[in-house]
Length: 221
Image 1 (tube, rainbow, N blue to C red):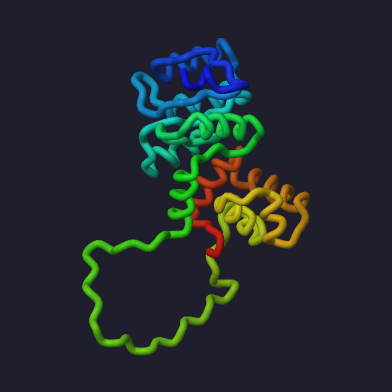
Image 2: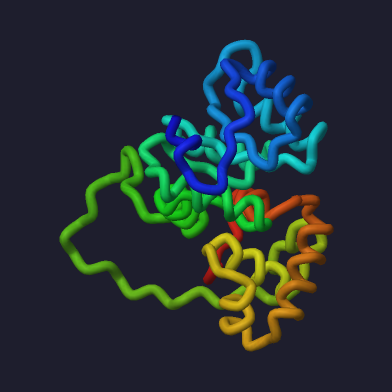
């Protein structure tokens, strides 16, 4: 009912589970599927994977009450280009649908924050850690940075510049913002993005964010 009231959006079907969703996608070829995750017979992650594999012209935006990391990253890795929680308002849903149709990622602000926290390794208490002593710690000389030959290899043959671009994508920056940050042209940024997408076998920015999280790549890392 909510979607039907949004301008520029026509609802062509409603499915009770993933299997029915796949049948309706094959029948109507919609631009976007708004996908739940917890469904009988075929859950939303598997349905998303099959929609993207069998109907690549149809994008998927997940709309769910579950915003835990397993649900989020499983959905993104399956091919979802957007992820919203069910407290999203009509304007936020409409914006996500428009974003994924234009090739961008449709992620809610809360989801973007969760991704950034995980990518940056947000500090937290360590279970079972001993309480700190009151005495001041003895001075420790800073460790010397590892020699270039000792640095861990970059994943999938990525160059250092491609890793920097990937980290900024994961931080939510647009191509123009990345160009400004790295002092290069937007065309150069686009070339780097095309190269890193090919090397990592990701299809879009949402999957690139999931890839960056998996490999611990973040702005400043």
